Image 1 (tube, helix red, strand yellow):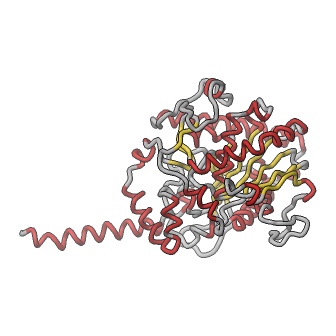
Image 2 (cartoon, one colour; image 1 turned 30 degrees about the vertical axis):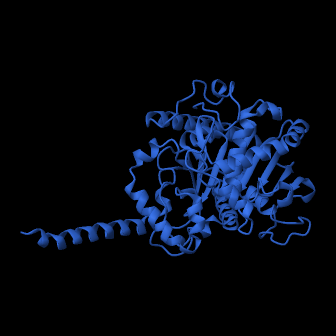
Image 3 (tube, one colour; image 1 turned 60 degrees about the vertical axis):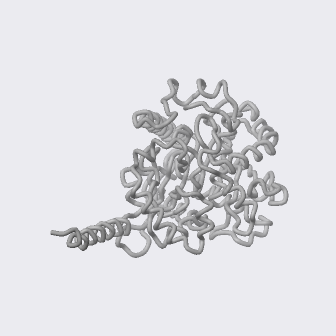
Amino acid sequence: MSIACCCPVLECVYCLACARWAWQKCLYTAGHESEHWGLATVEEFEPVPRLCRLILAVYEDDLHNPLWAPPGGYGINPDWVFLRRNDQETQGRAPPYMIYLDHENADIVFAVRGLNLAKESDYAVLLDNKLGQTKFDGGYVHNGLLKAAEWVFDAECEVLRELLKKNPSYTLTFAGHSLGAGLVALLVMVAVQNRSKLGITERNRFRCYAIAPARCMSLNLAVRYADVINSVVLQDDFLPRTTTALEDVFKSLFCLPCLLCLMCLKDTCTMEEKMLKDPRRLYAPGRLYHIVERRPCRIGRFPPVVRTAVPVDGRFEHIVLSCNATSDHAIIWIERESQRALDLMVEKDGVMRVPAKQKMVRHVSLAREHSEEHKAALQRAVALDIPQAYSPSTYGTFHEMEGAGSSGGSSQRGF
């Protein structure tokens, strides 16, 4: 048989291979990524819809007369807003934010809004990054977001210190969406590294909720800070899965489906072991919460389920070909679906009827489970030979790593 006779056969094999890849990608849904994760509890997920509403409130000019309030309102007391910064006050170095004293939940909340499509300064922050450009605390981080986080910390450090001093029993929670989510993820890392400047000694007084975050830190940092940072992703959201340069994404807004398809092909052809061994590859930060509300080959939305884990491999590595990939990124949808999920959890669990003493026991038990899961993730990172990853000898304190270093971008300590 001549070579020419083989050409149609090779073409058929190639076409079949492409068809098989396309079929698998079309059937692949975001639910597959978290199908083996555990279910979130009411206690750990309760702050999420409340913080989403706080982030939405940053968009309002006058909280006493809101224009864009979600159904049921923001659920906040406008008189408890301690500080607000708009675009002019941040000088384009960071998106607008506010500090809210949540006396009902004993919490000082630092809320940062997401990307403003009409602001060039927001694009400048998001697109200021090259692969492997900036090191921080033994790993790699997004350069533009780190600079914004350091600027915000320097600007508001004294304010936060005074608030923490006046409210010694309050936690300090950072919350943000999209661009703001990446900023607060790095901001809490800067704050943890500079606890003495805030007058805090306990690491567990810091919390961060990154809603639909950009990939902003290397894998070793994403796992290491999972005891502080929580990322919330709604179903098919494209941004936490976007591994290509964000500059290319925003240059291709008019052909985003084409770019997503090319990214799918690239991810399919890249070995997972190679991805894990790349120390400069950025990931969604911390512990992951995945809200799943759609099923394959089904029409419509189902009652949302929230799954959580501290994964090392399989950390939102594949773009989902879905018509909802961009709408699932919207903070309005995330707030609505997270509240639905919480209401279903409360109804099923009956947690509101649990006595206060039993609630305290459940919180302690949950903290212990999270600590064990976090420690297992650190050990798995070592087992997979993740660059610059090691399991600390004293879990939960990290004194050996943090005692000698600063928060500067030139820090080269491992974890």
